[in-house]
Image 1 (tube, rainbow, N blue to C red):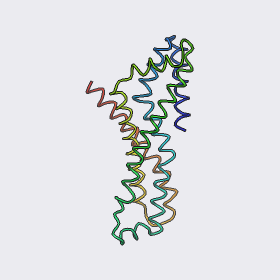
Image 2 (cartoon, rainbow, N blue to C red; image 1 turned 60 degrees about the vertical axis):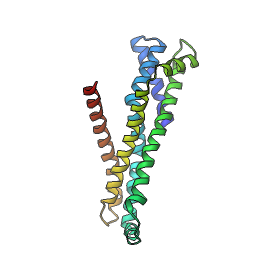
Image 3 (spheres, rainbow, N blue to C red; image 1 turned 180 degrees about the vertical axis):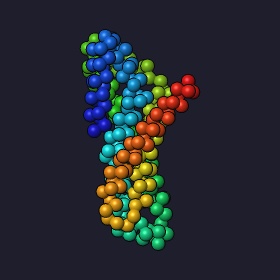
Image 4 (cartoon, helix red, strand yellow; image 1 turned 120 degrees about the vertical axis):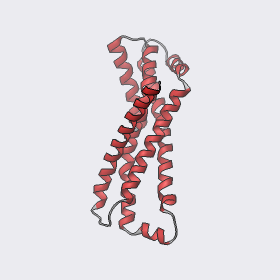
Length: 198
């Protein structure tokens, strides 16, 4: 899904920039690189991850709580945080970083295919030469942070459930909503902070 979203984004951005602003292929690729690397890529990947995984994480934890499995783990002396929460949170952050890489590769390749002026390799090479380490780190960091926030929100909601089985569908949908709102607010906060720092 992330590759498909990246391919679509690359094609759309290049077509819009060239069609509406008449920019060259190299300039359009630079716009694609900046917009997707710093803002669109991490946000799109996080939305895909949230839609797919936030409800699954919350549902699994709520089901374990309703079935008494969490109580059993505590009786056995197993830390729920170490055994269930941290692996999910770390895996979510790493997964979002990898999905971001797939998204960017697909966006660059499809964007380069869309530019008719020069060859595919020349467009990709030109875009990669403009890539700064700070932009790459910003994209990877935001992706990891969004994955962390999504998973942490879903875990919190999953563990805060009551013991009724009616909690399962309610908290599954709430986990997606809370994760998306938290992610958007965090992205806005990062944008304001980065604007004030520069």
